[in-house]
Image (cartoon, rainbow, N blue to C red; front, top):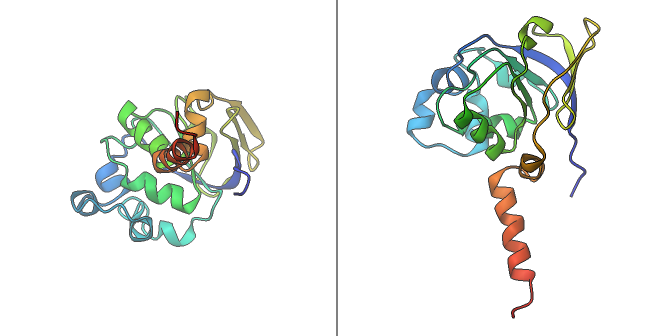
Length: 178
């Protein structure tokens, strides 16, 4: 297994406030169809918000959003983000959206007040999700935000809920019977 990298360095993709999960992050038709295959979801990530996003995004790129990102307790879009190796920095997001992002294994920082004022699409960013450091190399700006809580890091590090459950099951089956 390769070393998990909490620090991402890549291009900024800035979105606004109140981006709904259905329609803003991933088309509603894929949510209704309960599509969970990352390979099928990736081509549709942000297609209604930023057409062609999946063709430009590279592992390490960082999505910066305003308030109320990802409204709606769905995980389809976060599965695609994790598959692309993206990070997510939000001014705020509802608890259920945060839970879905962590459950999909997305590196995420929330409660990042004013983050959208610190960057524009195309800026070169570096974000340390473990320690909460946000650097915009294009503008020479550095900020510190609340990091991902210790209790959630293991889930993100192993690729989300499925990875955590797989490791848990392996520990259970490897333990000697009493």
